[in-house]
Length: 422
Length: 181
Image 1 (cartoon, each protein chain N blue to C red):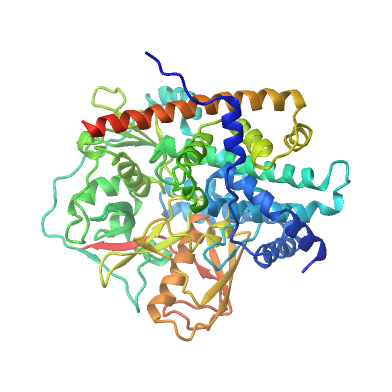
Image 2: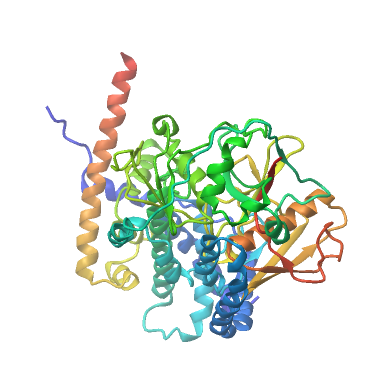
């Protein structure tokens, strides 16, 4: 028999009126600072933005056209399609932990970028049907190759990141590796075959992933993901092997993070299908027509693998603007990631066209070489994540970090945490 | 410090914060939104025409900021559902109770949780009417609704809360029985 509830309108209403007062911990000064800051920045930057955005787009085309000769097309178009995302207008100031800047202004245009791929699925499907006539070259997965070793570099005196110059001279591919404690780390793997430079990220992945010693590098043995992935323009399709094991419990998200970090720079979508062409089912997610791939618009933190080795890791969250991302540089999402911003420093950030300016405030003399390097490089990666080309660091000494010239705008790196197959 | 800011802040910050935190259920987010409310208030203060009271004007800005926040959350959530981890990260609703709530009796805590399961419209009405103790007319002005819509939404919200409270109680009761076995 159903028991009659003791709750009537009066009781609910009087209980609601008893809800306690919850007090804010922010001070008037803190909020006033932000009010002033927003006013100031608005005045100086807003007028330029429409012009800056179109200039940036033009400039990027100019830069990219010669680049297309050397680099694979997916990489380039991926960059181009993201070129406008940094024309966001507001300026955030990084610094104290609580300083998240809620900036709605970029909302509308950003939201359209963030549409779930389901919305786009019907159109994509049509395209796919047309595309089936086109020949798609299927790269076959090679057998594990003996005789290679895998190395990760980086430290106080050496950058962990791959530069444009290195990219011109070497072939490399992105891969998301899984740490022993379940975090996905974006890596750029340089392979010992310069002639492979014109291969796509997928071809390089298929050719070389078996030679990458994940466990030797301190990671879990997670790759290869598939033996039949094919690419068609910006789309990938294939079967994830051992999908049941990979999606046990809540681990589907690890799989999707790995896919994103591995293919997100070069491809737009991935469609997971069984051998018979039906959609693969992911535990807790079910069947999804296709997954969007993206690595864009994150701020970078530090993940310390052991006492010596560290990696740069993206935030879970993506941000509307570079300034907002930098504003969140202290908002670490778990206890394994560390902020790259030393306690003694605070920042002002502003993106204008393809360049970002970071004004550093605070004492730098007591910082270690490693702290300085991690600070600079995580900002460079954040700028890269917003498709910016360069970062001007203001208020740092010329030789702040070995290997960089701070009198000039510093170029963002080509790749992520660098590893070599030798 | 600007004297207008100082006055508005002293007079309204607690009420606005209260409004925000009961809607977004997360202290950090509410504090960020509070900041955003005052940024917008100061930006548009000179255009404030005094058609409504200062208080309802301020609350209507708070409402807009909150709705923008929810919209953004929803976009993130869609995106997360689409290719990531469906709710574990980014989404805030499963936060632990604020200390002020945790110190209260079980019914209050339960009601606080139930409030989260109401629609955004229902939450806004409940918070305005009962927690802020605003009149129907004021609530209608803030939300930009007719008074009729405020009344119906309020009625539905209370009905929903009644059901949810009964459900929660039932749930807790069942749990106890299972434990005793």
